[in-house]
Length: 122
Image (tube, rainbow, N blue to C red; front, side, top):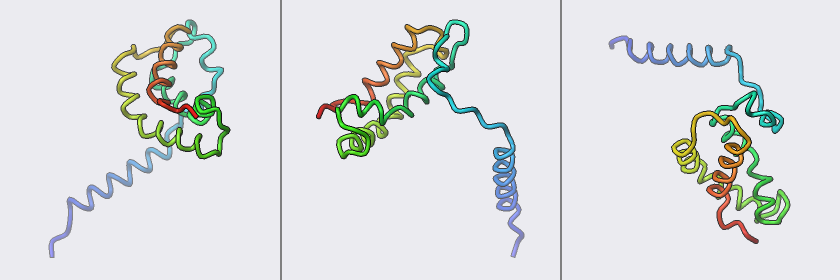
């Protein structure tokens, strides 16, 4: 039987990647204060979209009028999560790569929320 050189190489490369990923510096969590002074401290569009998606339970609570943990809220969050890929793509295609003003942040937020939280009325 031949020694599986290709398999060993691929597995070794995968292990090296995992090891490298574990040792690199992880990005810090983003909170709402990050978006307060966008003209002086612009934010990447991807960071803005990621943060807005983490706000889904709260957005669904506002959209449905039902508290987190209720069936209506859980259903809204589940439906929104199924649309995240499509909504991300439309945001990335329609907005510049950097959010540098409150107006741009508002436009991105409203567009993304309207895409994610559709027909969530009680």
